[in-house]
Image (cartoon, rainbow, N blue to C red; front, side):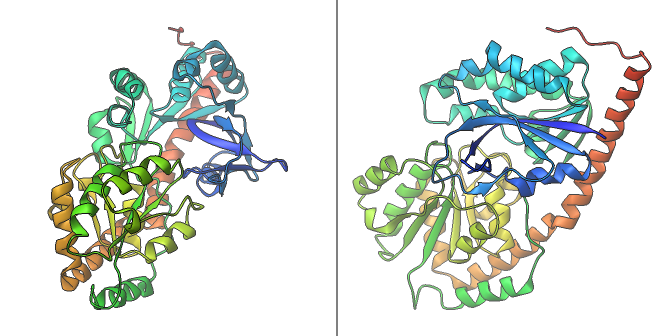
Length: 404
């Protein structure tokens, strides 16, 4: 029997019946992947009250939730209460899977080294990009520290899994490492491509066209401002164009901005949806996905969109260039080029269909069976490593690393 713990700052909420929910991508479908290698998984995240945006079920058989309370001040995540909680969890497991960047992840890395527990990291984002472009002064203050700490712990990790080559270059590891997206796609279905091509056949001649942007409304780095400013330019020539925002968070800021730009009638706020099929079906009603991010490890939404043969335009940062055709990228914040790309594509149905086919083919690189086999090989190696350390410790031959 091998018991693992998973550490990340993801937020979870428990309802009255004891079921845990999340608004992120860490639902039970993703967490249960680890049960292919470990008998039980203890999940250590941040716990808050249930909100309307918490729609993805996170708990289930084999998964034990051991979350900390959400703390109002960022530095409290490194305080004694959190350290004590992480230490208690670590004492009852055989190995740790730690997602970075995250405050809980940093605490877990330190504790794993201190206690000699086998550990690995999953690098899912760039601390510098996301904090610097968060939209707050606190984010800019913490950006350099976040970059340095993520670099430090990834460098020391015996095993490191990255969701993009960009992250592997920015945060190199001295241990065993692979690049493997954590996106969860359905098996490809040719009828999806057929439906998309049929939708694009008429172009703008017989219906209003729809743009979509996926991302939390509570941060600035997803590029909502860039999208709104681009929309304000495009609607001069295409007044029926609509932009839909999908993501949790307070809409007031962006409603106000849409009013200031004169496009409030062209913007729709769709709230949040359970991860998976609901999001894919939402994408089926779009003509174009825009990803004007200032920070992106590997855009899960981009891969999901491509699996629905949806044309995509995005910024040329992070892992985006690994997915998006270069001629459909723009510099972060360049709303004029984004507007030019949007208008140019929507006016050319033949080019849209060509891009839809290209994206459909690209998404096949992320088929579930391909990713799962790659991920499983890596985790089998980590599990063997963890079991080997446990065997050495059982014989009294494991020297503990000293704490820092």
